[in-house]
Structures are given as structure tokens and as C-alpha cells.
Length: 317
Image (tube, rainbow, N blue to C red; front, side, top):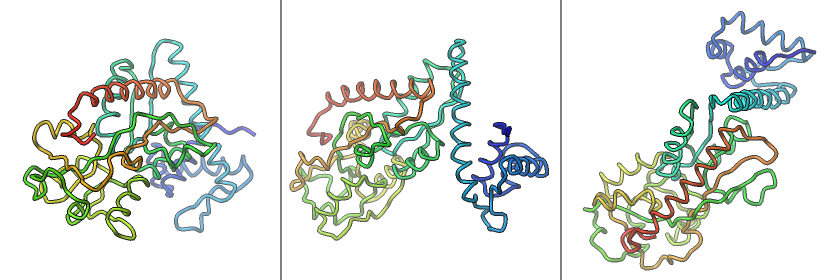
């Protein structure tokens, strides 16, 4: 049996777009040529790949098995191509990885900036989302690794985690906010105002629930883009939550005020980030991915050093 990568790419496109028309457009083929490619793959494998009677063209059980292998083979072919280019001194190729909203604020942009300076011919795409969505993409082999909260993955034998420097979560508001002039505020006062957050890591959600006196904590505004939330905070009485590293420039410029809480212990482990670099164990990384991971770790150490020099009373670190 002979199956070429082109046919596998067509099947992956069909599984992603769930439409022969959209998938054909995505791979720059006519619909008839695309359909013939899928039919040829079905003939070679001896089974139907998608349920044509289903509205969403869901893969069959056999199709799901082939889809898993197809994604792996396509990724490995890309890795091989990257390795060949690296060995030839070209350093071409594409790197796709993911990160959570907080690392996307400072750490990942700094790392990417340094990376493209060292690898000017590489193409980098990083996708910002919460850890659950990033995990789904990692397992589907759509990304090579991600940087996000690692609590869910540290004890799982299917994952490898490289821990990054912890940072403490801080609460912040605009300078004209009713609480901004207070030296300290209570949790009751804090929770009397709307809170605007990204999807909270499980540890932060627990803190919010315990100290708000509610059965569960749901923010008034939730978004995966930190700077969109920052604009909400700057133009309302909403209170935001973020790490001192991402807030420092705004606090130093007088655009934000960091709130000091009188009844929320600073030493709580739950008040600190536990971010890291997450990969799937046993799955090889491309040369570009390995280089980017090394750069993320270097940038993390550099930013931790710069954060250590900030005023702890001003930024709540």
C-alpha cells in the first residue's frame, strides 16, 4: 500500500474544515480533484474516512486512527525538513507553539524578539489561549509546545514540564478608582467592584472563591487578551488581576495603581503563578522548537532579574 503525504494533508484539511469545498480551497485544489484524492486514500486504506451522511462529515472510527497517524507523519516530515535545512546552515522552517494570556504579556514577545534575531529566516506563529485549549492543540499535534499554568500536567506521565520563575498575582485599578487612594483594602471592599480577568488558573479561582465568601467565583468580565482587559480597567471601576511583571511599566508610568490587600496573605502559594513549558513526552521537537524553548528560559531568567529590582511595596511582588 502506498500513501503519500499529500493525500494525508488533504485528509487532515477535511477533518479540520468538515467541508469538501472549504478543505479544497484551503489546499488550493478544485473540489473535484480534492474529492478524487480523498477517494483514492479510502481505496488504498480499504475503509471510509468520513461519515458522508453526517452533517459535519465527522471522521469514522478508522478515520480517527488514520488522522492521528497522519498528523504525526506530517509533523515528522516537517521536522525532518527543518533538520535538513539546519544541517545545511539554512535555518528555514516554521515554528508553531502556544502560550497563555499572562506569558503573552511580556515573556513570549521578548523571547520571540530574541529568537527571530538569531533565526531571521524562520517563521514563528504563537497562539494565545487558555491552558485547556492549548492542551487540546498539543494533543492534536497542531503546536509543538505551550507556555502556561502547569498544575494540571506536572503529575501526568504523558507530559514533560519545564518550570519557569513564579510571580505573585496582583490586583490593580485605574488611578482615579475609589480604592486607589487607600493604603490597604479588604477582600470585602475588593469584591464589591467588578473584576476583569483572563481564564483563571485553578489556584487563583480557589483563592477568589475562599476570600469572596461565594460558592464559586465568576468574574464580571473575562477575556483571553490581557491588554483588552487592561483597557476595561483603565476606563471603568473594574479591578484587574495580573502579574507584577506585566503591570510594572503601567504602574511606573502612573497608569495603574496596585492594591495592597489587608486580609489576603501574601505568602499563599495559590497567589503565585506556576507557569512552565509543556511538551508531550516521547514526541520529538524540531530544532526550531528546541531553540525557542531555550530562549524562553533565558528570557524568563532575565525578566525575573529585572523584576527583582522593582519596588515591592509599589508592585505587590
